[in-house]
Length: 105
Image (cartoon, rainbow, N blue to C red):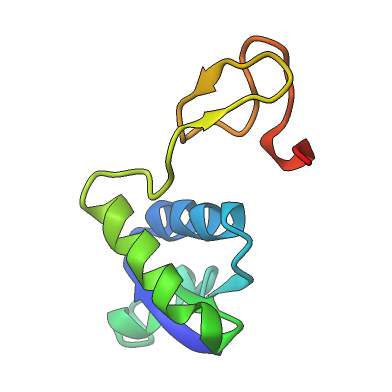
């Protein structure tokens, strides 16, 4: 298990976890609820951390995180096989026919 990202912004860490989950990279957030310890613990020790479970996923996770932080979604648009509509990468469900991307063959 390796740490790939740490930030005082809990929402950003959660969003990045969602990005990695969307790419089927097993990960978890540590220190998610330590914010109450600020003042008693060093501030950096209370920041949420994003950890990747499988070390083999580390390079892809770092690439995805860098892409997101640079303004990209880390994904490419995808075409719905049910209706043929092009879907923007931030969505996992077709707006036209409600087909989920995960349900694709």
